[in-house]
Image (cartoon, rainbow, N blue to C red; front, side, top):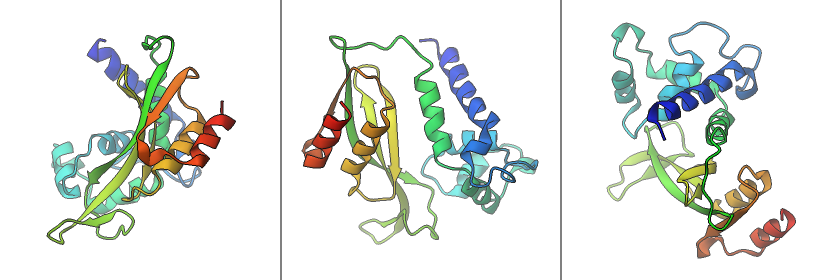
Length: 205
């Protein structure tokens, strides 16, 4: 697939969410209505490309012009206005924009599992705070994903705090939402072997 086409679809997905940002923020009346150094489109692009460095380092690398460099506090204030559903919507718009997905004997083969992802350290966020073997604190999310093994895309994700206790519950939520092709086979490891998950699969056909 042509990289430029993929990038255009990705940017268009972000643009569609930004054009309807009132649906994806905490206060639809006032959030993202005033002109700031961090408009919502820049904010989303910045968050998506973030690595696991400190927030100050991430900001310096992303904003080349020192005059346009926002403070870490300003970024956190803008980020707190944005609901996580904005990123889920961008992913769904992006994935569903393509129609040339391959299948195995007519079925999409999906795998569900969780993975820890390090994020910029935030000492005030107790939900994401962890400690390594040297008792050094860091911040981390646990991401549960429904991955297409043939087409190498994620059909759905669930982002939780730094814990693995909700993996099965996250898969139940994704099955209930059903943001993946109807003709799908879902696979998972033995940690997902629970009666309520089997019941959820039966109830949702």
